[in-house]
Image (tube, rainbow, N blue to C red; front, top):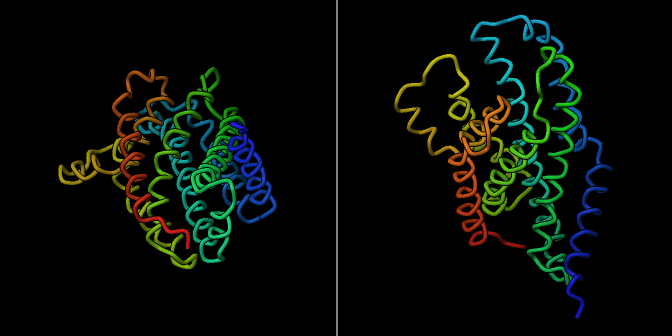
Length: 254
């Protein structure tokens, strides 16, 4: 028995899905090119001010700009996954893939790997292209920040699987996913605001997965060690475990 057969199948399917994604101009432009371009434009507009400004608002901009860009990359990744799963189900592709020797787990893991690889490429391009607009001597934590975003995206992808499981058609899945994730943003960015939210909103933010992603990303960007954000990491892992369990109960191939 060839024990490496599932691994080879996973690699081949992952490479195939990447080629399919890259050949679709709108998906590639929306997921990779636009986030990088937006970050470069905003960094260039604010670059000199970020370097000269010492007030609280400029300090928050130095942290908030890359974090906001990273979160929107994660959201675009999740919405792309929701759309693809819905299209594959509606077109009968999932049903045909399920009948192959690869197995359902391999097929689902492939889509997660593709999204994580594209997320890593996007954030690395974003940070490398925009770093020259930041203050001279600023240490841009490219590797650590990329790893933090991958962990955050991995966790939030599990929410996408729930959405893709509940909504069976490609017409309604992306709008619902956008609505769900966008509704989390006001709570998630509460830690980056120059003022405190009301106690009721602060309480709600503790139950928003994106809150822990923003906390982790902003901390890593500022140079915090990972040990200072073990609570955020644990929360993101719990979100993935719970959402994956729910999605496994709801997911349908047809």
